[in-house]
Image (cartoon, rainbow, N blue to C red; front, top):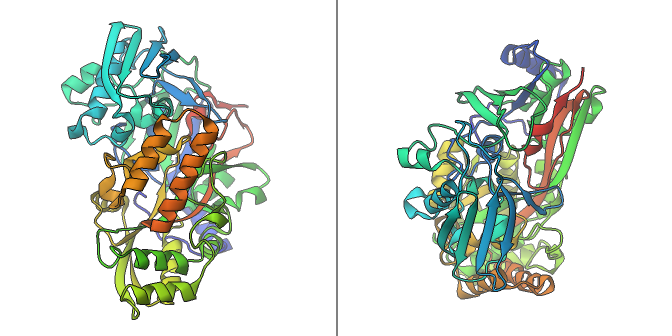
Length: 512
């Protein structure tokens, strides 16, 4: 969702387009002789450097290479060590103790201590911070630091998902000294595999290996990242071997990679979801039957096929495979125009209404196409939809304020339903301004799922959550898609994961 050149909404690419992209790529990506540096490209730049505040995927993908959380998720979405070597819940589930890796150091040479962990979580919990993940940690009543390597979180209640929440880069551990200095977001001192040596916004990032990283030696000495807003330029630069590795967001470009003999496409289903967010605080979306009519009028498969070449699958709110409900069991997932028109009439809008939908150029690249398909579909029930495409920063500001009638969004998934949705769909959620809807049933189900430890019981609870929220229709969930990365055949060691993380770049190697 960063600055973007003209968005391609075609189902294919012309040779002239590729040729033009090649020229763009040659101009934008300097050839480097240093084989130990990974030359990389992506189309969207970070919007900021504060790991506790950022919500854009482009920011998180950069920051996860610089900062570290206490724990991480592996390819199977299991908790693994990061800054913490080990952790243990008390028998009553109300105390969580971490032992830190004694080798963990910040990039200024200082050891990572329990004081840094405590200061980081106190900063996240401080409402003045406006931390993206604050709602995930509201069960933390106090934090003890009995010694520099031990942190004890005292919880007000058992909190099953809190470990998963702590694996997110929005829960990164930052130096207590930098918090005190007020420099988080202006300096980048993490404990991760790379240091940020240079950032030219919307142009380039230069990362160098952190030789003190507790995770061991990185596979390359550094990563030079070029920001090329046109992904055809990225493909051209790959074809001409000017870059080694690329993150691709546009399925129209990604599906061309396997046709190139020298390139490899990594394609992974992800937990993130494409969604049409309605604003139930604005008329006429205040009316349940209007929201339901919009849900019934949308053909999700057509949106997927048109905007994303069918690269994905229709989804309900939960995208975690073990917990997801079959969409066919959810409210109006089969398009029903007659039902939609009847609901509109019952709500007093038989003649329809006018509204606008916002989208960000570039994140996702399919946003404009999704908006156009939805615009056409809603016109059949009299909804006149004005599409407003925005630059990333403008979109994010409007999105965070809930300043929209409808919004096309690609929202991040999580390995636990509570961690994924509590910030929107609980009464204490810190993104309630974005959701603009809550009821006792949603809040109650979320709280019940938070404390339930039995996996089968949790599946039932969150299945009820899915059925209720899709019937209330504050948002219209559309589909999940894939993460795509492309690389030269001499790049080894990259492992894609369902969260979309690029963290495994820490161990990528370049073979001669």
